[in-house]
Length: 310
Ligand SMILES: NC(=O)c1ccc[n+]([C@@H]2O[C@H](COP(=O)([O-])OP(=O)(O)OC[C@H]3O[C@@H](n4cnc5c(N)ncnc54)[C@H](OP(=O)(O)O)[C@@H]3O)[C@@H](O)[C@H]2O)c1
Image (cartoon, rainbow, N blue to C red):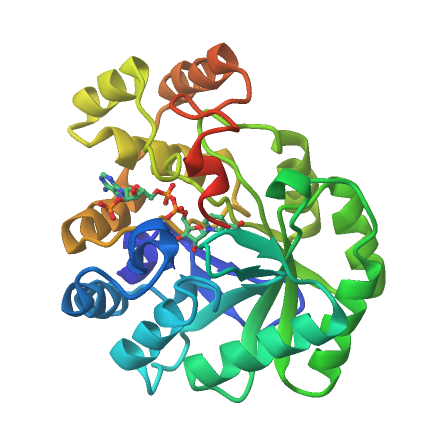
């Protein structure tokens, strides 16, 4: 039953890791600004336990959420981890005492970040580690990532990492990483209204590589659109459930990691896997993104929603 409820299943290429297509992103569990402990630690634990009880077997995190607090709360809520739970983390950034997000991609920093994740999650091997590129302005930026991917590949050889992914990357960077090691997933900014990666998604789908959109609901300021609301009204769903269902319909290699600090929102997000969108409805929703260009409806690159989480 979980298969239907959570949007079907996906196996990361060249691995034995199979997950349901609706997972959970843990970034919202840290304190305000993704800094410090959760506002409501018991509530955070309840969200994580409810997710797993409902069948979620894919959790996205990073040790720089908090920093440390998000991984520590995952460990407190779920360790020893249930069989089949895939925890995906990311390295490539660090937090400064002023709460800013800074690049941290030297070999030493990447190795330390992997060790921090291992310690705070309480595991001997990390299932999947994404290398998150921090361009200037912290968005995407062309440039070689060969050195960083080579460091992660070496940590995999040592048994600290099972599989490697990339995040906030261009198509050229995905290709460069692929030439060094098997890339099992790509995690970039994408949602109904921000569709810069359409061609990349189709290319990854042909190669069986997972595409995991971050900000699937629009990020810190969730998506709003009259079309989304109208469709939701017809389907007796919420607009954000429709936004998630649209992603599930967009391509079979898309895996969802919507973030929430609320059990009620978590349940709504998981139920989005039960929505079927007709070809006519999909056309209607596609027109929303065409009308809004590649910018999220409620966001702009200068918006803290874009720069406030990675
Ligand atoms: N690789 C990267 O650079 C990167 C960047 C950003 C995020 N990420 C990952 O991607 C995950 C998802 O991104 P995100 O959490 O930033 O953004 P998101 O999933 O697009 O949206 C999260 C926001 O939507 C709200 N929300 C969630 N479900 C809702 C519902 N059913 N109804 C109404 N509001 C709802 C949340 O507030 P409530 O807490 O009130 O529900 C929160 O404000 C993160 O958790 C993180 O793991 C990765």
